[in-house]
Amino acid sequence: MARTLTDFTHLDWPLRADRLVLRPGLPEDAAAVWPWFRRPEVQEWTTTLSTTPEDHQQWWDSTLDSCLVGLLDGEILASGKLERQDAWSQADMKDQAAGQQAEIGWVLAPSIHGRGFGTEFAAALLGLAFDGLGVRRVEASCFADNLPSRRVMEKIGLRLEGTFREESLHRSGRWLDGMSYALLASEYRARQSGGAAERWSSRAVEQQSGGARSGDT
Ligand SMILES: CC(C)(COP(=O)(O)OP(=O)(O)OC[C@H]1O[C@@H](n2cnc3c(N)ncnc32)[C@H](O)[C@@H]1OP(=O)(O)O)[C@@H](O)C(=O)NCCC(=O)NCCS
Image 1 (cartoon, rainbow, N blue to C red):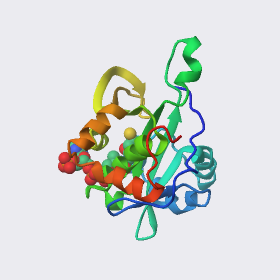
Image 2: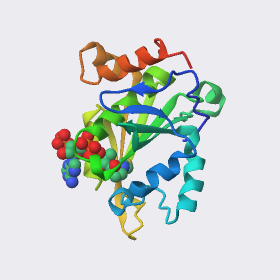
Image 3: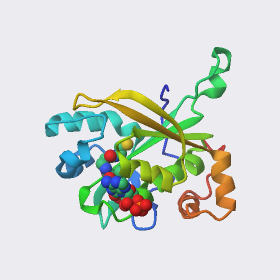
């Protein structure tokens, strides 16, 4: 899907989740995340493999319009994507479909894997997409073999919408299955009013943004 500018400026930062603190990424964050971002277990499923700090900085800078970072005790240990995108539409509906959905993604430092931080960070990105940006649909995708990421998607309430047979070429040379997950804003709100566990994320956004809701974009 085509990307449009993701404007985070109308939200108040930082956003406090349960344990992580989120804010938009900055150019200087590239160097701070490089020591763990470069590690093989982190890069196994990521799209872009940078092999030098200079390449990493160049790539990082190119992502800044949709980059959010998560800090624990002042250290950046999570990097995420929250990218506003245009929904597909018939050509004559292009303007109405522009910017109506978002894609989210996440990468965490191995030192904090397996302690619920991935789920916490992803839930915060989901809350920001719906409550902060006001999009009507959020999507996320991964290699089918990336079991931790699939589990994170399930735990934040995304729905598996498709498994695509040998759709994606991994840098190992293998063609792997891809998986696509999504959730609608209406479904997210229905779950919130039903007392779902992710309620904290929108509460945090409301506290920080003064109550930005759908349509505030
Ligand atoms: C995906 C990632 C963000 C998960 O972070 P995390 O902090 O470990 O996630 P959490 O602790 O919140 O939860 C992970 C879930 O995956 C499960 N999991 C972890 N490793 C697993 C494995 N090898 N097989 C099956 N499930 C696994 C955990 O058990 C947990 O589920 P549970 O609570 O039901 O037990 C992290 O592994 C990561 O950064 N990976 C490298 C980058 C990446 O793959 N990014 C996503 C690209 S799509």
